[in-house]
Image 1 (tube, rainbow, N blue to C red):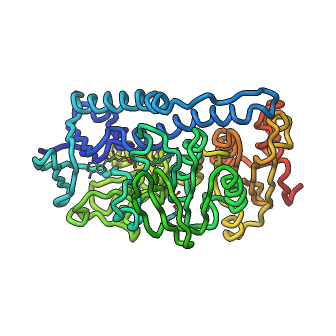
Image 2: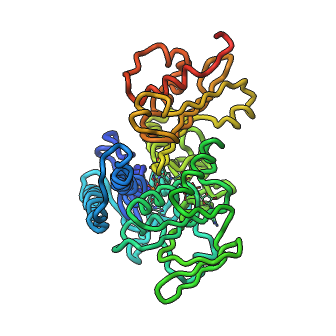
Image 3: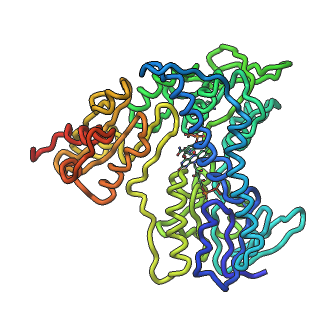
Length: 456
Ligand SMILES: Cc1cc2nc3c(=O)[nH]c(=O)nc-3n(C[C@H](O)[C@H](O)[C@H](O)COP(=O)(O)OP(=O)(O)OC[C@H]3O[C@@H](n4cnc5c(N)ncnc54)[C@H](O)[C@@H]3O)c2cc1C
Ligand SMILES: NC(=O)c1ccc[n+]([C@@H]2O[C@H](COP(=O)([O-])OP(=O)(O)OC[C@H]3O[C@@H](n4cnc5c(N)ncnc54)[C@H](O)[C@@H]3O)[C@@H](O)[C@H]2O)c1
C-alpha cells in the first residue's frame, strides 16, 4: 500500500497528523501501547504516583509545624488503579481514534525497513508492505538492562511493569542512580517500602551540577540505603526472596529488583537498507531540521535526539510536523536552553550549563547559591536544605545556568528558563518586574540579586 506519510511510533509521532493531512493518506504504525512511553510507562503515570508520594511525605513531616498526623495505611491497589484508570482510558481512545478515524490507516505491529522508503509491518504474523512519499521514525527508546541481570533468570522489573504490581514489596532494590531510580525511590519509599539503591557512580544524579548531585546524594542517603560505587555481580532467587551479590563483595536480600540503568534508542530493523545512518551509540543521525540521511525520511524524539525528554520530543515533533508540509520553509530544532526536572525528594531542576561547564567554556562567571531558608516563605517551611544556584557571565550579565533543589523546583525554574530563552539579563529579570511577597519565588529574586557583575 502506498501512503503520502507513514509514521512509525505513536508517542510524539502521534502529533504529526495535523489538519494539513486531511484528505491525504497517512499510515500510523504502532507495535505497543498508543501514546508511547510518556503516557503509558513514563512521565505521566510516574508523576501521578509521585503526587501520592508527596502527600505521604507531607503527612510524615507534619509534626514539625505543630500538626500531628500519621499514615494509617497505604492502599496501593487504589493508588495504582486511580493512575491507570485514567491512563488506560486515554490509550484506548487514542488507539480507537487512529484505528477508526477517517484520515489514518493504523497498522498494529512492528515495522522494519526493507528498502528506501519501504517498510514491512508484521501484523500478527501477516506481513504488510508499506511505501510512502515521506516517513517519520519516532520509535523512542527502551531500558538498558545489565547483562548479569537480564541473563540471571530472576524476575526483575523496569519502568514498563513496576507501576502495575499487585502488592507493595517489603523491600525493593533499585539498580541505577539516575532520574528513574531517584523518582521510583521517592514513590516506593514514601509509600512504606524499604528502598536500597545500587549505583555504580560516587553520587546520584551525576549529570547535575556538582553541588546539586553531592547535596542530593547526602539527602538520598538519609531516606534510602544508597550503595555508591557498586554494581550487581550476581542475582539468585531463593524461596521467598532475591539474593544479590554486589561488586564490593557484600551480599543483600531483597523482595523486588527494579532496573533503572539508562535507556537506549529503539531503532527499527533494516535501517541500512533504507539508507538511514546511526551514530556509534545507536541513535539515528539527524540534522537540525529532523532529516535523517535518507531522502524523505525524518526522525524525532528519543530514537535520535541528544535528549531523552518529552518536552524535547514534543518540540521536535512540532518542527518536523511543520517541515513535512513546508519543504520550502524548513524550521530548525531549538536546543539552546533545554530544561529538565527530577520529580524525586527533594525535587531537582536544571537548565543551561553547570558551573564546571561554564568555566570550561571560558566564561568569567559569577555564581550565587541562595538558600530557600533565607526567604520568608522558606521560614514558613522551616526549610534547611533547599537551594537555588545561579551561574551568569560577569561581563555580559547573561544567565548561563540554573540549578534548583527543593520544593516546587520544577515550577520555580521556569522564571529562569524564560529569561534565558528570551535573552533577558539577570539584572533586568531581578529588577524589571515585581516579585510577589512573600512568595517562594523570592528565592529566585534573591539569588539574582546575589550575582556580581563587572558593571556593578
Ligand atoms: C519512567 C520514565 C519517566 C519519565 N519521565 C519524564 C518526565 O517527567 N519528563 C520528561 O520530559 N521526560 C520523561 N521521560 C522521558 C520521556 O518519556 C521520553 O523522552 C519520551 O516519551 C520520548 O518520546 P518519543 O516519542 O521519542 O518515544 P515514545 O513515546 O517511546 O514512542 C515511541 C513509540 O514507538 C513504538 N515503536 C518502537 N519501535 C517500533 C517499531 N519498530 N514499529 C512500530 N512501533 C514502534 C513504541 O511502541 C512507542 O509507542 C520519562 C521516561 C521514563 C522511562
Ligand atoms: N523527570 C524526567 O524528566 C525523567 C524521568 C525519568 C526518566 N527520564 C529520562 O529517561 C532517561 C533514562 O533514565 P535512567 O534513570 O534509566 O537513566 P540515567 O542515565 O539518568 O541514569 C542511569 C544510572 O544508572 C547507573 N548505572 C548504569 N549502569 C549501571 C550498572 N550496571 N549498575 C549500577 N548502576 C548503573 C548510572 O551510573 C546512572 O546513575 C533519563 O536520562 C532521562 O532523560 C526523564
